[in-house]
Image 1 (cartoon, rainbow, N blue to C red):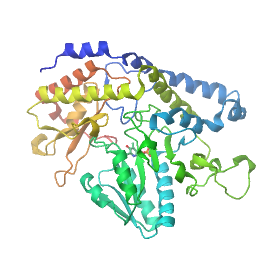
Image 2 (image 1 turned 45 degrees about the vertical axis):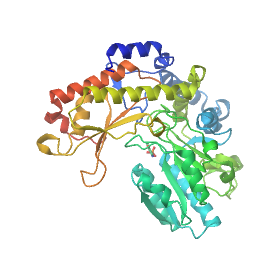
Image 3 (image 1 turned 90 degrees about the vertical axis):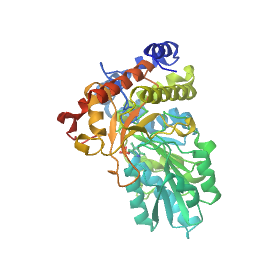
Image 4 (image 1 turned 180 degrees about the horizontal axis):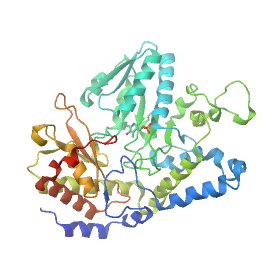
Length: 436
Ligand SMILES: *Cc1c(COP(=O)(O)O)cnc(C)c1O
């Protein structure tokens, strides 16, 4: 069946989540398909940050640590968002970055594994994991004498054996949008005595997650992608109650101490997830992040994550169908799985090598730049130039909080025009910027 613009408008009219877009500052004339990289600003954020700066800081100064509740903001935000991850009260904190939190939990997992099963020497992860995850894993392996094993997704089940200590996976792959079966892989890993660390950067706020049902050991994730916390927003860290107090995390700072304001010379970790805090927390950033988390609280009466997930799948299904119907014959392929249970909230298109200008490269970068010039904001992720299995990627994130079905229609239509006009071949679209 051929889809029409009117079909898309009808779907917007019926969308129970439609009003949520009013909670965001939507830049005029743009279709923002990069909420998986940097989420939009909630309208409430600017006023909240101004209040923190002008009142809590400028006027109330040091008293705000108590009076404005600065001192336990990481825990309060953790408690607010915990249900969205299937975590319980006092199990989650927002603090530091994903990279830093990953260093803490991988080190903790390495220490636990060294105690329980010293013969196990391998840390397993996916070759196409987000590079910072690989770099942190490399550094933890170097410090703990572990071997880092990089796997393709289909090699993971067979690699779960009694040589492996830790399995580190990102739930939704940043390049392809493919989603792992968290519960299934965790159960398979646990059957072999392997600790499981899940990175939820591309899943938190985007897909249903139940850390307790999956029985994960540790999890980390990002505050500035689907949680709309602002650039460099604090990330989160979670540890299952059975492991959280097994060891102190490696960055023993005073905010993770059992009694920070006792000012004792020796370190004694706090009970529970609070020990994963390190130094003084970024209150302005945490306050901005709270506005992002408040949006999720506002979706609860509208159906919460089930409604968000249903809309996200409808948006990505629609984009895949429209690209297939309207952009055929231009060398595009689909890197994102069609099966719903294997798809996150993004659609990643590939383009064959040799289709770029003068047969150089794939042209994917220039196509993304030409789309951006037309106000359709996606991004580009570099492939391996045809030597391996990774093609160049045109990446489009679909955030059900603020995108509509007509937006999806318009995005696919702009892509069609960019491809058919060949305007992406213009030299101005080939200039590489620092951030792609
Ligand atoms: C976005 C992302 C990160 C980012 O880590 P930072 O420490 O915030 O820079 C890490 N891992 C994955 C899988 C990501 O998608």
